[in-house]
Length: 55
Image (cartoon, rainbow, N blue to C red):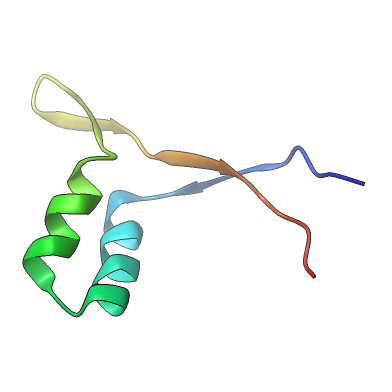
């Protein structure tokens, strides 16, 4: 049965995950920032995703 539960990941968590994969802090920071939603210069939302059931 598919789960409809949504999880949230912060931009900082995404940046850390990208840093682990790429090994490049500049690329990780830039790519993570692409997912941030800004309003008046402040991040107002984090990325959302549907949680997959464990395999």
